[in-house]
Structures are given as structure tokens and as C-alpha cells.
Image (cartoon, rainbow, N blue to C red; front, side, top):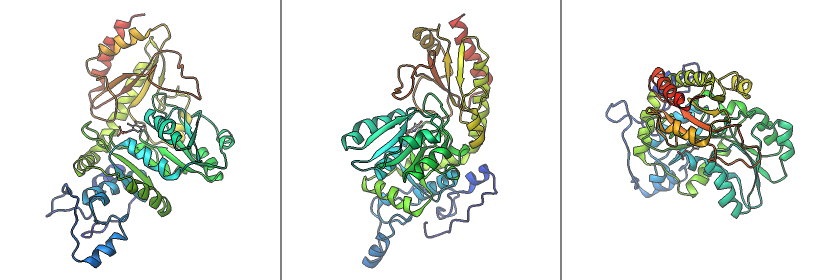
Length: 402
Ligand SMILES: *Cc1c(COP(=O)(O)O)cnc(C)c1O
């Protein structure tokens, strides 16, 4: 904690929006301004040599010793994210993918085994099948809808990590996180979870997760103008492992980007409410269209994972998939997406702007059937008026006919 103010005790009785307004402010005030300054820097000066020795020993404790240990801007965002996730400590890294890689590499070494859902974010799969495989770390991809007995049966003596992501990337399967946690812990493994979709809607540590991963690039930054990731833990033991690995690999985030993240956090609560409502409105509209086979949105009662979502989540992100009926060809679906005027075609999500991304043929599944029954398109609903989005979609779908 920076030395000029103490962090007030967390008040979990306050609402999320209140906490997002007040978290991460202690110790960041500069001349009375409400927001922290952007503290750029590599060198930090010590008053004397003894101080250098003393502070160096506390370098994982929000102590400014050198640029890579972070500064007040980083510490403010660390506190905000720890508050969102309900964890004790957070490390901010440069991208969401770095936040995936650091804990995987922190807990796994040569000869170890990890269990990863088939629906995992694609670049995480690449890490498992590429670098980690080369280092003799074996990955078994499992069906994301596996039950507790199923995951327990896949555990080996050398299984050190069970990885989870709920809902899954592109195909939106819901995972039974408490069941995974029980099986992982019974076998002596850690449960790591990519909680980017859940963000404020899923409290990972209340469901047995040991390490929670966020691509802050999404709703927290919220404006599609910076990349950031976070790794949050709930014990000192996990903190030393994760922070130690992140530091050993030189992970860091630009203070300018961190400042953009802090700015995003101040309005995130209202953006997420609006985007959740608009997302459900658009998803329900899709469900009523004759061209649509299924809508992959966990908040819709038709979703196979709806009961799990209802049990464990308090809300939904505005990111979901639409499966078109099998009579619609790839060319027809791509032409529909191309004709949209309010939806951009691009990766990422959580920003203020809507996106549409055909995903059939772009996602890899090796443990489960990749065929959803028709062409898939992933939609991200931004902050536009939902009536305008639906009008745009309606015009594009009308061109598909049938
Ligand atoms: C975007 C994303 C990431 C990676 O975040 P970047 O900041 O783009 O590296 C990781 N996990 C999920 C689920 C994501 O959607």
C-alpha cells in the first residue's frame, strides 16, 4: 500500500457501483485531485542504502522499489480488481493472455499434467499445445460440461492444474465450478479460472477457485483503447507463487494503460447493467427469428447451462453466440454479417461498440463435437440503443430470406 493513506476495510454490504467509485483511491491522491496520477517510471530513488535493502525484501507488497514492482497507478487498479473479484491480492499484467499464461506456468513444471476445457480461449490452447508441450507439460482437454466424477476420473498423480472458463469461448458452455474445485482439490491440484465473462457476476473465490484470471481489456477498460490483464488470488501462498512467476518473467503493464483501466472501472457498473439488458434483449429477439436454430446465451432459459448460470452467477455479459439453421450456407451468413452497419467485424468485446464475428471454422475443439448444427456467429452488444441494433440485424436477416 502506498504510504500516504491506508486502504479502508472492504465493505461488502455496499453495492457494486458504490465500491467501483471508491475502491483503489487510497494513497493515490496527488495534491487533492480525486484520480491517481499516471506514475511513469523505471528508477525509484531510496533515501539511503539501508532503505534499499529493507524495501527490496518487500517487493511483492505494493512497495515501490523499481518500475517492475509497479507504482501508485498500478496499486490503485490492483485494489479495484481485488475488490471486483473478492480476492486478497491482484497482479496487473499487460494483456489478458499474459494473465492466462503466468499462473499456468507458475503452477506447472516439466512432467506435470493439466486439465483444460475444450472450450478454452484459443490462445490458451495454443500455449498448452505449443510451449507447454515442448516443456513436457501434458494437457488433457475435457468436455466443459463434465461432472465431478468425470473430472475426478481424469485426475492423475501429476495433475497440478485444473483450468476452467465459464461460459466457454465461442460456444458458451457453462461449467460446474464448485464440482471442478472439489475434484481438483481432492487430487491436490489448483483450480485456475478465466473469469472474464463472469467479471462482476461471478465470485470465483466463493466457488472454490484458487486463481482468477481477467482480460481487463474487455469491460473494465471498456473503450477498446487498451489491453490489460489481471491475476487474482485469495491466499498469501498463491500470491507468492503467482507474483513470483510474473516477476520472474518480467511481466508489467504500462501505467498509461493502467490509468485507462482505472478510468474504465469508474463507469463499469453502469455500462455492464446497460449492456447486460441490451444483450438479453437482442438475444431474445434472435431466438424468435425463423433463421435461428439456437442462441447460446446462458441467461436464456433455453440454454443447456441456464440452471448452473442461475445458481452461480448474478448477471450476464453482453456476449453470446447465435447458431443459424443448417440450410444457411457459410456464404449466406457471412453476407448477412457483412451487410450489418452497426456491428463491426473484429475480435475482442466488452467495449462500447457492438461486434459480430462468424466463428464456425475458426474455433478448435478436440474433445467434443465442434458441430453446433449450423453456422455460428458471436455477437457482442455495445452501448448503442438496442432498437437500432435490432433494426440493423432485422434488415440483414431479411436479406437471408426463408
Ligand atoms: C480476450 C480474452 C482473453 C485475452 O485478453 P487479451 O487482453 O486480448 O490478451 C482471455 N480470455 C478470454 C475469455 C478473452 O475473451
